[in-house]
Length: 640
Image (cartoon, rainbow, N blue to C red; front, side, top):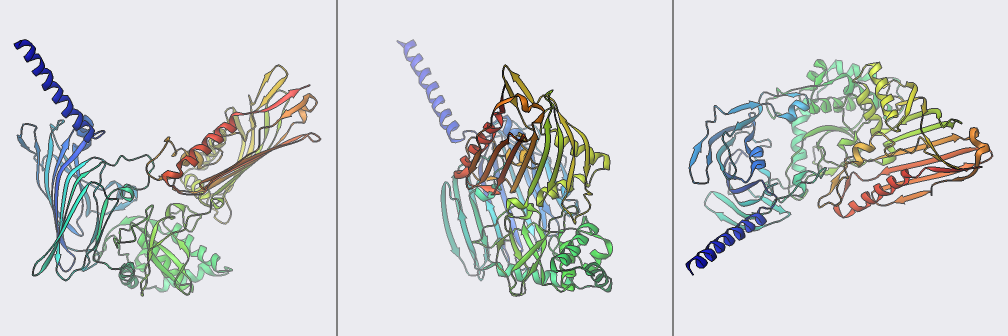
C-alpha cells in the first residue's frame, strides 16, 4: 500500500512539473529571451534637456538567447548626451549575483551605420559590453543613466518608445516627469497586453506614469516594413504641429546658404546655354552629385547631425554629407532663379503623423512652385544616379524647411514603367538545334541607376564581364560572343548594351515532335526581378511585405524558323497569359506567321506597389506561381 501511495505521489509531482513547464512553454513559446522587468524614468527640464534612468532585468531562456544577449550594446552621441553604465551583473537561478567588470569587458566602436554611410564622427559611438560566463536561466541586470544636456530642438520634448520587442515583455514601467507648463501629447499604437496609466500634478511638475504588462513578442518576418511600424509603441511630444519643426529647420539652415562669388560664377557656367527649366536643374544637380564627394566629417557645433556646413565651405572642400550637399544644391538652384528649399526625409520609413516625433535620417532638396508645393525632389547624395530622386527615397515621410511652416508629406512612389528594362531579341533557329542572334538591352529610371552604380565602380574589362554574366545568367547554355555598351558616365542618354549570342540545347526531339525553349523564356528576365521578387518567400504573412521598389520588364523576341520551315506540320503555342491584380501585372503573347516564318513573343511584367499589405500578399504568390508555370511549357512543333 505504501509503495502504491509513493508511486502516485511521485507521478502527481511529475505531472505538476510537466503542467507548469507546459504553461511556461506556452507563455514564452518560441522566445529565447524575456524582459522580466524594466523601469525607466525620463526627467525633463524647461530647455528640453533631460535625464534618463533605466533599470533592466533580462532573462536568458536558452542557448540562442545566450548568443543574442552575451554582448550588450549602448549607443551614445556625445554631442548631446553623457552616458554611464552604473551597474552590470548576472543573477544566477539560485539568486547569487555576479558583478561584471565593465572596464575589462567593454570596448567602444563606431556605429556600423556610420561606417556604411562613409561618415566619421568621433562623438557617435557604441559601447559594447561582453557578459562572460552567461548561461541559460541567468538574468542580466543593468542600470544606465543618460544625461541629454543639449536637446536637438531647444525647449521641446519628444520621443518614441517601442514597447513590443522580438521577445516577451512581462513588465515595463515608464515615468515621464516634465515642468508643469509643458503640454504633452501622447498616443499608444497597436495596443497589446495590459496597460494602466495615471497622471500626477504637483506645484511645479507633471508626472505621466504608465505600466505595461504581458506584452507578447512580435515575431519578425523577412523583408517586412520597419519593425516599429507594426509594433506596439508610445509616441509623446510637446510639439503641437509639424509646422513647428519645419520652421525650426528653416531657421537652422537658412544662415548657411549665403553664396560666394565663386558659387555664383559656377552657377552661371553650368546653366549657360541650357534650354528649359529641367535642363538647368539637371546641370546643377549633376554637378553637386558628381563633383561634391559624399564624405562625412562631423564638425558642426550647434546641432550636429542636422546643421549643414556653410555652403562656401562645402563648395571649396568639394565634399560633405547629405545635409551639406542638399544645402549647396538649394543655394545654387536659388541663384539660377528657382524657388528651392532643404528637405528632411525619413528614408525608407513613414512617420506616425498623429504625434510630432521628428525622427528624420536624411536631407535632400526640393524645387517648389509659387505656392510652396514640391515640383521636384532632388537627392544629390548618389554620385552615380541619373535620377533626381532615386527610388530608395520614395514612399518616405518628408518635411520641407519653410519660414511659415509646412506639413508632413510622403514622397511619391514611382510609376513602374519609369523603372523599365527593355530587352529585344532577334534570332534564328538552325537545323542543328542551335539558336543564334542579337540582343539589345535599354534601361530607364532606377534600373538605369542600378546599372550605373554597379558599372562606375569597375574597370572597362570588369564592366564587360558583368554585362556578359548578366545575359548568360538568363539562359542555360547561352554564350555571349560579342558585347558593346554605352558610356555609363554619360547621363544624357539611357544606359544600353547590345551584342550577339548563341544558345545550345534549346530544343529537344521526341519522335515526331520538337520542343523549343526560346531565349525569352527566362524566370527572371530583368535586373531587379530576382533581388526584389524573391522577397516574397513566405506562404502567408502577418505583416506588410516591403519590396522597396516598383519596376517593369519588357521582352520581345522574333525568331526566324526558316531553317526548319519544311519540317513544320503544326506549331502549338502556349496560351497567351494575361494576369493582373492590385500589386502586379503579367502578360505574354505568342504568334506565328507561317509565310515568313517568324515566331513572335512578347512578355511584360510590372510590380506596382513598393509595399504589400498582408491581406494582399496572396496576389503576389499566385502570380509568382502563374509565371513559373508559364515558363515551364515549351513551344511544341509537330514535324511532317
